[in-house]
Image: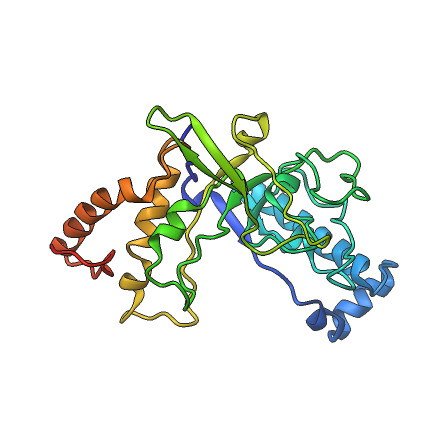
Length: 275
């Protein structure tokens, strides 16, 4: 498996999720939707979102950039969590979708984003003309959460191309895999497995990211909150898929922590040890 490499950030333009309650409270937005015959319901707001993202994608393409949208562009929640509306067919096919969540309604799991198929959704079909999007993965790699601050092993174990947890032998051959749902089961109460490893769809997964949001972060805790978990994520993304043994990685990350400490970076300890 090739390394997951994200191109330089300056080649991308990110868009964020939209709160539909804000749109419906705006006289300007409501008037725009009325003039264009767009319904003020979930499907209509998805159409408006897709229309906006389409214009943005075309605009940034003129500057040689690629638009990246958070997965809400596909799976904005719908009227209920049990039966949300599907993605809009207006979404531009050259959009990159960034996955951070696997919600129960299941439109934007990695399999669906790349066009492999909607898991657990026999009623779902891809919009006409769409064969999936390129993707970035952040699921399981957020660094700013207040829980499991030192759980670098948990970040290391995350598989970027499947929701299975796999064990490999010394030669790199798969020994066993178990299916898991990082964000809980789907709407039918089951955990549906997907596996892009070795498939043509794997090439659509451009890379991964370990985000560190700023709600509880400032200069006093940025470095220890980021490391060593960011180092664990980096090794996974730059390694063959079978290199996922946290026990084997620990000596490498301990050595790297010593390097970073010597350079003045305040890195949280991996566990009991010395430097």
